[in-house]
Image 1 (tube, rainbow, N blue to C red):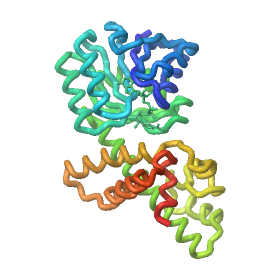
Image 2 (image 1 turned 60 degrees about the horizontal axis):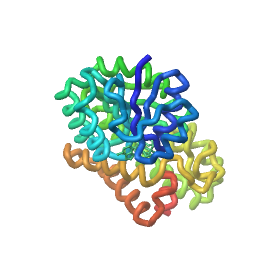
Image 3 (image 1 turned 30 degrees about the horizontal axis):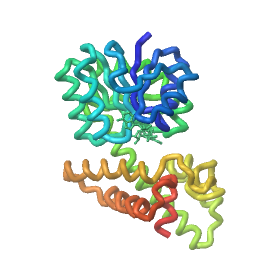
Image 4 (image 1 turned 180 degrees about the vertical axis):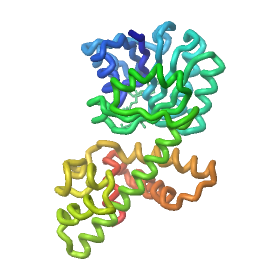
Length: 290
Ligand code: NAD
């Protein structure tokens, strides 16, 4: 059984780790917040009190950290002492440019690497139903596949280095834009005097249907249970959505892509965060354009 180092035991990492432990993997965990490691000791994690205590002989290192700058610092700290062919899998959501740089750093040290951001949120991390959106080579992907299967329900190898982060940026730009669109459709329906439950019945079964309506309807009391029914407690916060849209916006600029709706979505979420509402679930955006 492989020996895993897991760095970043926050909302997502702490739950992904439990699924690895339940599948009998040996996991040595590190987080700058010691309490997060201690909380996982009853589940069977071994504690690293610093990055230096992640053993040199681990087979795989998984990172689940807030941003690219932090992931890069962690990689710089550990790559020199890991044995050749150790696999580093970064599951954080970070910008494409940094992701590619991390693959390069690993390649120069004869380490294997994957960028593997996830979709599915804290619930998916807990239930082991995440989707892993992966970039890298097939050798690394095949090594990681059994772990993806323990922590998720699906993984897609999208292409070479950085492709996972690229596909994730596209997905979240689309999600943000559809959520704003769903809010506008319900606002219009309300202003036209429609019963919103009837409108849900129509939209969720007609050509306007999408995940933002069918699974995560942002209108209180309408459709399946969602953060809208719980005062927009996250879920997936507006702050995190802004982070992802800012990554997408950078990619839009770098590639000179025309994306007026994605660009506008980033502006909308920036406004939400500037108005100190970033802690709310991202679907609360529907109340900002009323
Ligand atoms: P989080 O802030 O809860 O967890 C991040 C953890 O990293 C924290 O526990 C923090 O103490 C730790 N950390 C920070 N710097 C560190 C360092 N130098 N060394 C070790 N540990 C360090 O965030 P999260 O919600 O778990 O998200 C993690 C990543 O997953 C982010 O990139 C996020 O965008 C992505 N993501 C989150 C969700 C979600 O719904 N929360 C969904 C998909 C993707």
